Amino acid sequence: MKTKLTKDLEKTLYQYCLEQGSYVVEEVVMPDKKGIVDTLSYQQLADNQIEWRCYELKVTKADFHSKAKLSFIGNYNYFVLPQKLYLEIQDEIPSRIGVLIYRAFDKKAVEATPQNLRTPGFLMIAKKAQFQDLQVDEAQLTSHFVASLFREVDKAKKVEKGLQLYSDDKLFKELRKRQKTGYDVYNPDKNLYDRFVADLRDEAIDGLQDELDAHNAECQELKLKLQKYNQPNLEDKI
Image: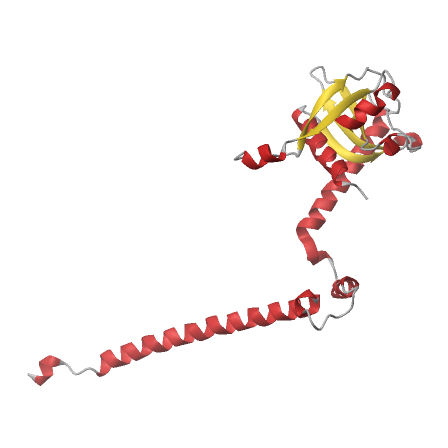
């Protein structure tokens, strides 16, 4: 389970990579069992050379000291850290690994700004990464990068399609799972089934009311036409 801080780092790093002119994707499985990199960016340089950058996000000391493999196989490799954590572990960072420090925007400043900010904070380069040759076969890395991009596109399409992808049985099972605390007779608003039925009933009532209003309007129009037709002609009386 990702913490809010981890998600904030991810959002900010993603935007940072885009602003650098890179293609970027998160959680990419590396070739040759080199682990999973948190974020991988791909940038084509002016001379048509490709530059790969790997980013590992850490938010706590325990996370930094985790035994999980660090997938620093790119041309440039970085830790992305909150400033407080960086000050605590900066002496433990290898010389060739760079560091991006995350700082959250001030809440009062965010509330005062008239524009919607794209990220919850910003990144600063605390330590530059040193260049190294790519540590895996580039063709394989490109293949893994594309596969991860497809995964993200597929997820986005599923979200866009929403519940259309689920059968009635799956939806019913999901509703049953949501009723973990049982049926609350004293608080019907908390029961998903009651809310669903109430919404359907309200929609049906609204639909019937619209239909009734249309019939009443049509009936009134016919009455006006009938009155006009039955009204005696004044010239005939003269």
